[in-house]
Length: 233
Ligand SMILES: *Cc1c(COP(=O)(O)O)cnc(C)c1O
Image 1 (cartoon, rainbow, N blue to C red):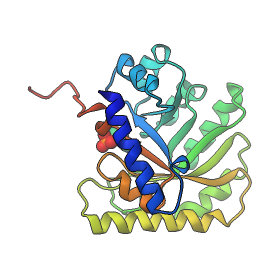
Image 2 (cartoon, helix red, strand yellow):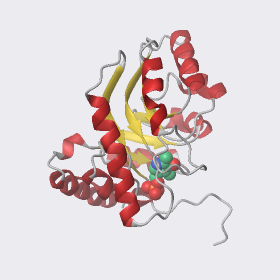
Image 3 (cartoon, protein in one colour):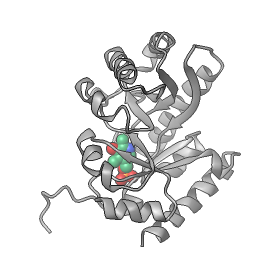
């Protein structure tokens, strides 16, 4: 049952939040619904899910009209030419990684009458070339740029760790980005509010919270393993 799995995740969130000296209310659970249909998503919403995460624009568009009211988060890479499709549908874009994308978000927000679009800057904290996100050293430049965009509101940072990194590395990377997050909290740029740190997935969300995450993106632990339709059973 989805509600049982959800309760398990929520209990873990509460425990980890407490361990890091915070309340469970300080951590937002984003249920990652990619590859799952509207019925299952609605079941999760009935069980109290308020925020869902999708990594593909196309999937958001396919499901949008069939899913009950909920906050949608775009957590996967966003191509500039697809901003127009989701600008008035999602509550937050977690994967902002270029000035070009920021310009397009600003442009489409104006065009669609979206007063402000909450965004997170995706950081490539591991430095792995295959990972998306900006290197940490580029963050000041990007935030400075955002201060000139009136319809983009930067709410914080997001990161995805490399698959299969060991516990020590994982912890180090989570702590590194939390430090960048906290350092930037003290700085003031217009339109930048360092409130959200989105990190942690099914395998590591507890550690992520203990290292400062305020948003965790949990999929398979709630909905089961994903089938992409090409595996043999
Ligand atoms: C799929 C996905 C998740 C959730 O992964 P699980 O391991 O199933 O919890 C989190 N974040 C992003 C960006 C994803 O694409």
